[in-house]
Amino acid sequence: MKIEKFFLYFFVSLFVLCIACQEEKTESIVPNDENTSIPKDSELAALVKNVTTHDGSFDDIVDKSYCFSIKLPYSIFQNGRILRIDKEEDYTNLSTSDKIEIQFPVTITLSDYREIVIQDANELSALSSSCRQGEDDDIECIDFIYPIQVSTFNINTNRLVTEEVVHDSVLFQIINTLNSNLIVSVNYPVDLLLHNSEKVEVLHNTELTNAILDVISACNENDN
Image (cartoon, rainbow, N blue to C red; front, side):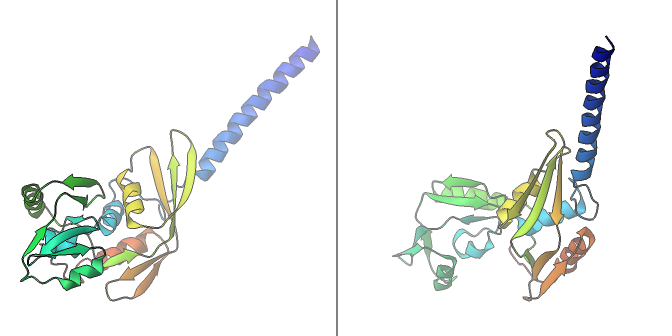
């Protein structure tokens, strides 16, 4: 009987110890440092989202809209002559005096990187009009230099994932899906490229916030 009680106490104690260790481990891996974590609805979250939003202004000479771009490749008629647009450099061959007609259908990429198919000029014009009525929130005067390391911790699943981010679209989606159950942390240092080609290294959230705020009005985006 004493042996049975001994084993009972032993396994109960072992179970409690395991639970305590699990709780201690959970607390130690949660990346909730105010210097590195980006809370939902915070100023920094909004700034990072605006820096990484898709900038559709590079092809405005064709689609007349800054909040989306036409996915390459596609074809247009330039002054009655068919021209295939394969890369961004091809837009340098176009002039504002050209008569340009898009060959539909085309796929467009929205500011949040969603893609939709546009069937005709009327559909494109309607979307462009709604775009002009909105705010141009994208910040074009500063860019992240990739790759950067970002950690996400899911409170519900107790899962910590660190991934290498290599493009604006990935970082945008991470910030865009922030919620009360997801903690996102940036693994500093992070390098930034300013509009004047200067590179800046930031070591924590405050420096990143200040770097973005400092350049918001530094260059004329003139997308509207």
